[in-house]
Image (cartoon, rainbow, N blue to C red):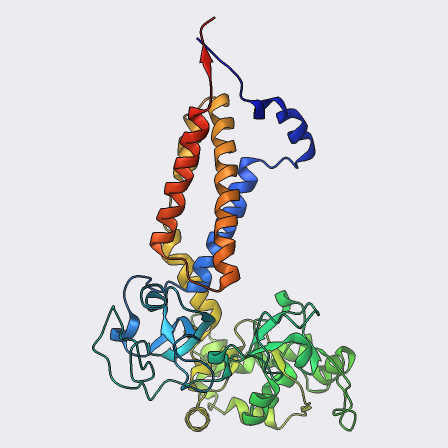
Length: 410
């Protein structure tokens, strides 16, 4: 028995010459990176059970439904599971994550919808906080994202206090490279929390301030100026060492030496904020950008903790409140002891079988990408039934291709 090569094989050499060669390892690595990003964005949120029963969740993936609560109606937010089960065919806005939020799905803000997962809910969640993000608008320009009328490439950065998203060009300063800062506080929140300026002069990542007509009356701070201010405030490498000694002297010592223990015994705890307020700091009309672990430098004395409470920013002293902690939770929950079934299968195949599997994988990836693009263009959620339908149709097309192959006896 010999199998006649289908017509598509005849031009395989020409097609391979035109198409870029991508190894299976590269495909798997790309797929793994996409999966990792998706897990980080969802932060370990449950996709099957409504989060309402958990109360105000510290951080979770949230969505707003434009179909149920359009502009002009009361804003509302829904959890990941409800976005699938109750709003699968609706137009949704992805809010990424908001802190201390309780799912609104099916409450009094939804006039014609009852939550399918947890129908018994209070009429309102008074502790929830909302902004224009729940209507699909962002930044001081109050524009949608992505914006079909905006042709300027720009990244969106979330303020850790108000949790609104801002275009980089609308922050009053050129944002540092993304790897140089960990969190951002917008200009409005800096004005609302002026104590942060005392920390910014020594902790914030330096930026180049944009001089706009509205800002020409004030001072512009560039990188060189910021470095000079750091030196004047005694925060160069030598003076910083001395300051760190003072900070460490107020913390429990794990050393067996006598120098630290004596310092702890003789030092009287002082307010870190008051110490910084005695030093020179420059206030500018810009957002500020902060490095990793900067929150641990905030003072936690009784007076400062009361100030945080009054300003409703007590979360700043909680390292688990950061978006990085939220993303780490999403990746760590699914990373432990994971095996790759595809790699296990490939290792048991010969060369011909491996090539055939790679071709099938590439066909599947191409068709699935095209299929999912339709949902993205329409702004609808992909449901389990949609995925099942895709694979049924894919298998049907595969069987038809196989049946078209002709066999003859030699």
